[in-house]
Length: 452
Image (cartoon, rainbow, N blue to C red; front, side):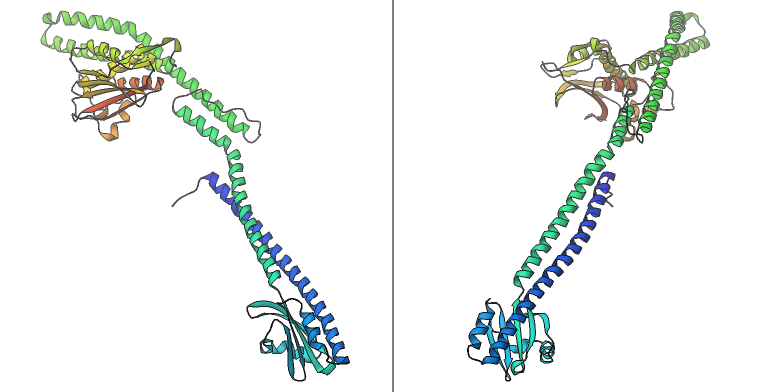
């Protein structure tokens, strides 16, 4: 079932309210106006009929000569009809109408000496019939006056009121939309600020509000965002401080481990096994400390002074050249440029290659190309690929994908891809994983291209 947004619900409510009010006003106006116009028309026709009936009665008293000419003159309008009943016969002037269509009740009242009037349709024409008694010769004077113009005016008024009602409803919807937009603007700003905070912009704040109802909301949100920013920065400083403090004892441990490895032949079998385990764990510890130091720096914005135009193809070749594997590298010509921090991009490429070596059976292809004004880096590995349900999770901190919960000599710290995601995001880029044509995983990085 389709559910309208709050803004549309408010707009529709305004429109329906306007429609109801305008409809009631239109109905009341139509009834009052039509009743007034019909009443005025009936009074006018009745007064005219009374005057005409007196003329006819006077003519009958002095004689019937010229009666037809008088009736013809009284009819006037070709749509009007004058009927005179005398001596058991009818005289008709104007539009010819069969006297049989006249209501018997109307004629009966006139015969009894009571003036009467009635609306009826004669020959598809709506008329007002006025029947008056004529004392001379016990006659009946009947006048049929058309109501065509009156009905046309009432229909025009009806169309006008309907159009006004529809326009009022449309204006109500427009007013509701505009009002709801202004009323919901603080909520829209709150949503946008919350989204920025969720994306990592801890400096997002709401503008100060002068409205007493909105000021507490803005103040509370800003205080919460400030507290969150301070908490995150405090945690980052703590991680950085711990990592720095660990570097000295870690260096001692690495040196001691290397000494043990050089004298490995002098050790007993049990001691050699212990030395190997110690060396593996020390190396893992060293990688974790380095990654933690990098994570501690991730919350800092990219230093504009560290940005430079970088030949991305050359950077990838340099990082790959420092590794023992000979992986084919395809670079589109001319080599694309990016505006970036060289140290961070070095770390991005190195971490992607490390991930391919540890978890993907080694890299099998590296490609640098252009696509949609972006520089695209693709790293294909020889592994089994990454399941769809884990393709976002692998970029989280301390995530090891399908190896989570297991330990081996080749396991990393679980921070490498998180560092990649953070560095790429800091450069307004994107990173994701998909299937490669070789059935392994393909890690893709896209960064804005720097025009030459």
